[in-house]
Amino acid sequence: MTRKDTLTNVRKILVKVGSAVLTGEDGLDLNIIEQLVDDITTLRERDYQIVLVSSGAIASGKHRLGIPGKLKSIPQKQAAAAVGQGRLMRVYSNAFGKHGLFVGQVLLTMSDITDRKRFLNIRNTLFTLLEWGVITIINENDTVAVDEIKFGDNDHLAAMVANLIEAHLVINLTSTEGLYDQNPAESKKAKLIPLVTEITPEIEASATDEGTPVGMGGMKSKVLAAKKVTAFGIPYIIAPGRRQGVLQEIMDGKETGTLFLPMSEHLNSRKYWIAFTLRARGRLFLDEGATAALIADGKSLLPSGVTQVEGDFVSGDPVSCVDPAGNPIAKGLVNYSAEEIRKIMGLKTGKIEQVLGYKDYDEVIHRDNLAVMIQPDGKSKT
Image 1 (cartoon, rainbow, N blue to C red):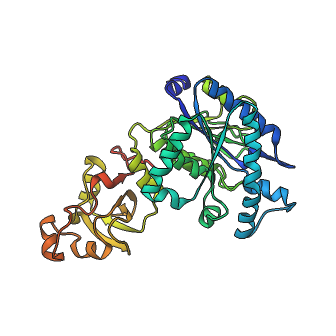
Image 2: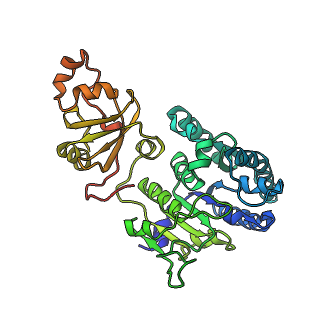
Image 3: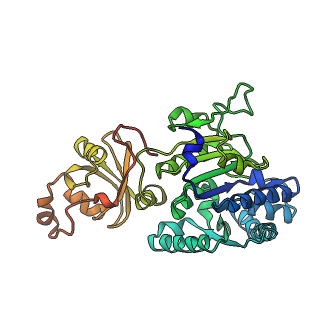
């Protein structure tokens, strides 16, 4: 299958652009931003819908305030983001305005998309902006999102937004040509990998986790984001963001950057949300029979298959399911609390009411609320 075949039915594209692409010695690189906007506008004229996840707010604010070196504290980063976000949007607004296009800003935190009602509300808003032809520019709400600044990055935000908007393609524009078999900064023998059909441990090992002076996510972050996106059935491309016309090259089917093919068996939107957006509050250890039932047969998790409970969680919380060796195989929303599951684990469904005095559900986790992250052939979806 050629690249053109993979991209034939693509209409809705999520473009993520990193700080290393957008910034230069004088803060925001206005020429690069104009170049990116021209590229996006050309795709719009070709009837593609575009949503942009853009870094650059912290770097822009840091430069505007004349602060040299890296910002060290969370309040410093948040303050720089507060200054830089407005300027970043003004630059985008002016650049797109030259083409007669309007921009809309959406700032997100993890809590916005872990709450299902807010998740759906945000999705409806984004769909409306797309329907109106507005170029939506998304960033983390860095001024309030402590955890996102400390642990997250826009590569993972983009992976979550891809699910929000049901994207057909994700293009991650970065400061390199794509994914190499080893770090090109350390070895002249490094070779670009044009196509990844499966993200193996070897592929992950080839990606460094070092960020740039102005960005938080290294290549490892981009590969992990690719795992999430392809698990939803979306192709993912890492490409050189400073190359003129790079988006048009990609959509013309040229061998630009690294293409990660989508998984043949992928998660639907709700199960993707459970698997990759929600943070597990505990773990359930399963016996071999339950492990096989979940992976091979797509069954619900019954109390008889649970051997051990870790954590303190309540009904409705997200919990990881692990095999007897402790390897994660699934994540789901539990019907019973940790305390209740400890009492009924290993028992047949018919014993639940006898032990608890009530039985609200037959299953510990119903299959509709269970995202299995191992394919029947044993390959990981994550």
